Image 1 (cartoon, rainbow, N blue to C red):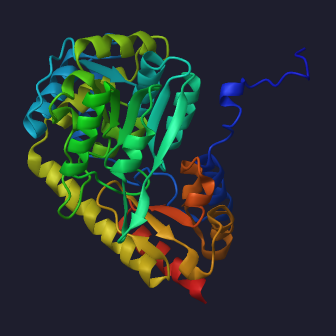
Image 2 (cartoon, rainbow, N blue to C red):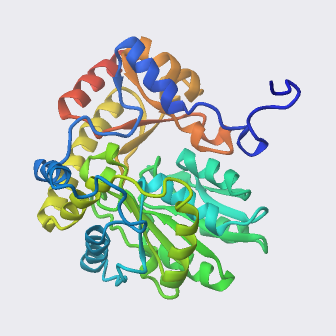
Length: 393
């Protein structure tokens, strides 16, 4: 018997309970609502990549433990992708590590690189695992808030600079940014790079939406800026790019010393994972540029359907430059509490969304904002919009 006087959950994780995604997905099931909350597609990725996974299974490739750093074919494909897309050269044997999705890559990076008491700066609002991973590492998270400005959310570079102290160890960046859809510009990234070099900071960049940038936006890896390759852990994954979120295949690219450090933590988390899927993802990364362009154009069209429909339904809409989420302001609908709004929405309109406040330390800053995912079939988005338009009545 454990003592009732002592909480079972350690104090580092005491603030983290069941995720809002689980709560809202359960509401979707209970009410039969359209789930535009959690960010996963409702169709599978390319048939030839699924067949590559089947072929790997049948050929006995990856059915046992794959190599700790990842199968050589995938590590080579990652480096080829980085070279082809961004002109970044990495050694597949020493500068790539395959992980169980980007979430494990983030956790392993923070566990490896952050000492208890170190400060970690992250752009708020942020993907919910960031806060939990900083806590597990014993670090102190320091949010720098992206604020609404002219129909989007922007970073205040002066606020970022002011947030750096002698205790700051690491910057945790996400671009394209979930949940706001912001894509950091070349000028913003250059300023961040200068700051990191000046203050001798490590940087972990979450770039899982690298292929989902729209309109005139451009994804530029931070590692490509002067002085950054040697201090940056770049994270990406197959889930968002190829619509296989259940495969959980992610990776980091970084200089050998950083890869070795992250692997030291990663090997005691999952050790290895997704053996046969690694071979399939290697083939996916080698798809022609036309595939990535078509994928981006298709998702941009879905964004436009949802963003226009949300505006017609009365929401204030922040048009995303990347990812597959639209952030909205519910105040034009006479609402101000995103949590209450999202908990009532399945019954009111038959749609599930996520309150952005869960992505903030400063909950009040995110209170009126709600996130919808557009990585669904167009017909599903159109039906969701039809339902949401009833809110005005």
